[in-house]
View: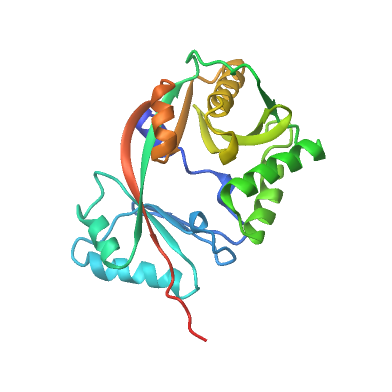
Length: 264
C-alpha cells in the first residue's frame, strides 16, 4: 500500500476519536462518512464529513438525511468541498435554512521556524496533574461557551485520549503573566498530527499566544519524528496559519442545519 498523499492526509485529518461518544453511530460506506450522536446536540457530533448523493434524486436523499437528525432534535453540519456533487449542494442546503462557515484546510512542515514568544509560557499538560488539566478544561469551556453536557464529555474523553503509554491526544495551555489564557490540542495520527481546539481568551489575543502554541506543538512533533501537521481553520485562524508558513490545500464550507424550534 502506497503512503497517503498530502491531499489525503489533510482531507482525512478531522476523522478521529476526539468527537466520538459511546453512542455515536459512524456511517462509513459508499463514499459517505457521517456521524450521528443521539445524546449530543453539539453540532460537530452530528456531521456529514463526506457525502455521495444519489444523482437521480439528490433532493430526496438530502431531505431524508436531514430528517433523520431533526427527528431526534439534533442539528446537522454538512461539509461541502469544491468537488462535492451536485455542484450546487451548498445552495440546496442554504435553501433549507442552513448557515455557512468558510474553512481552510492547511498542511505544514514541523520544521517551520516558529518560536515561543517572549513573555508567553506553553505547558504540555500532564493529564494526571489535576490542576493543569482543569486549567486546560476551564480555558476551553470559556473560549467555546460549551454546554454542560459537552463539557462533561470532553472532560472524560480528552483525559482518556491523553493518558497511557502512547496517548493519541496531546493538550497544551498558554500562560501570560502566569494566567492560563489559551489552549490547544493535537491528535497524533499515523503520518502526521492534526492541530485542533486552538483558542485564546479575547482579552489576551494579539500577544503571541497563538504562535507560541503552534511553535510548542511543532517542537514536540519534531522530537517525535513526525514531519507534517494539519489544521482546518476558520477565516481568522487561517490568516495566521498562512502567515506562520502553513500552506492552504483547499477551502470548503460547513453548513449547519438546526432542527425546527418546538412550540409549547
